[in-house]
Each structure stands twice: as C-alpha cells, then as structure tokens.
Image (tube, rainbow, N blue to C red; front, side):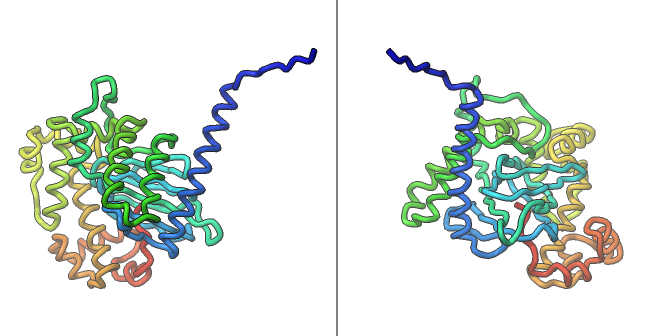
Length: 319
C-alpha cells in the first residue's frame, strides 16, 4: 500500500504566502491609483482627506507641510527629509506623521514605464482621539519621541487601505462606507508598529499633545512674531522643557520649525499663486527682503526668484 508523507507548512512557506498576498494587494492598488491619477502630480479624491499621487521622474525634489497623515505607495520609492533626518520608504513600508511638519521629499524610484503611485490620508485628530481613548490598556504602545516614522507594511493595514481606495471606483458608496473604512484603517494604524506616535499625539495632557498645540499656533499665526515664552506658557512647560520636547517630536527647535514653515509657505505662494518674492516674504512675516533671500537660498539652494521661475508648475506634493 502506498503512503503519502504529509508535510507541515514551514515559517518560510507562511512568509512567502504573506508576501504573495501583499503583492496582489499592491497590484490592485496600483491599478486603482492609475485610473484616478492618470497624470503626474497630486490629485484630490471624492473621499475626504484622501489624495493620490503619480510621479514619473526622480529629478526634482518637492517640499510641503505634512499634516497628521498616513502615506503608502503601490509602487516606487521615496525619501522624506525632516530637519536633518531622512526617512526612506517604498511599497513594502508605510509612513505616519502625527504632527504638522515641514518636509522635503524626493522620489528615488520612478519612471514613465513604472511610475511612483501612492496615496496619503489626512488623519482627523478628533476621530483619532476617540479611537485612542477607547483602546484597552493592553493595546497601548510605549511612548516614543519622534512624531514621524516609517514602518513595515502589514496585511491588516494594507487591506484596510485597499478597501478605502476601492471606493474610488464606487462613488455612490463613499458617503456610507468611507467613514467605516477610514475608522478601520485608523484602528489598524493605532494598534500597529507605529501606533505609539499617534497615541501620544492624541493623548490629552501628554507632552506630545501639548507640543501639538504649540505647532498649531505657529501654523495659524505664521506671519506673527511669537516668543518662546508665549509658546512655553501655552504648553504649560518651562522654556527648556518646551525646547527638549519640541525637538524630540519634530527634530527641530521651535524657531527652526517656524523658519522652515515660513520659507515653505513663501515658496508655495510663488509657485502656486505666482506671487513675487517680496510679496511672498512679507506675507509670511519677513520684514527684510535681503534676510528672506539669504535664508531662502540657504534652505532651497537657489535665490527665490530663480527657484520660482525654474520650478513653477513642477511640484508633485510631499507625499
């Protein structure tokens, strides 16, 4: 009598199966983004807070203000710079920013034949706080410093993101199903590898939450001179504590953050709204055009007028 040996699945077999499922999801997501983003650039979608991106070149870096968001891609690769730190990710990883940050980004893998295809979901702080407050103690993650990070993509997160993206092909379902898909995705992010970054930003009274309030003030009152004393009072911290926790969360001091914020907003005004350098500088709070020009050149590598003429219309978007 013939007997057949039964072999148990190995860890390698399981990992290969997971990789195959993730690859199939990425292929479907790439097809969806391609349909709804046929040309290079950032494209808003009918789903509130969801933006899709396409890029066919690695030549030009982009800059912008990253709100609290989740970003991933179906194909390609990208490098994000925040302050002096770099975060590299591709289709096997995702990125979370728990606070508003001035960022530089560059596509590191993209071509006409195989373009970068990605999307970003702006994270609603109210929805996030509601979910975070309901997490049981055993689902809470240890605190971390940085408000931005890159994590290994999981099936649970990518599956929830794909369900949200599928609704782009069913617009009538968006008002009813998008909030459910978004809620599941936020839950997966909160309980995933990078969940601590979101949890600490949403936690009332935490150092990170208080720094988030100072960041919001700097964004709202961009053109005003705001003293470190005022920011420290708002955060209910000493100046030294504010400096420490602000830099731990953002990688920058409050003054460095404000400077980058102003310069990036001035650049956006010139590129998108066709303002001249002097007007843009004044709008963001610079009283000295020469100081603006010096700091702009130091940050972007070229004088404001020349940079605007060269880059106008070429911004892909930070994510």
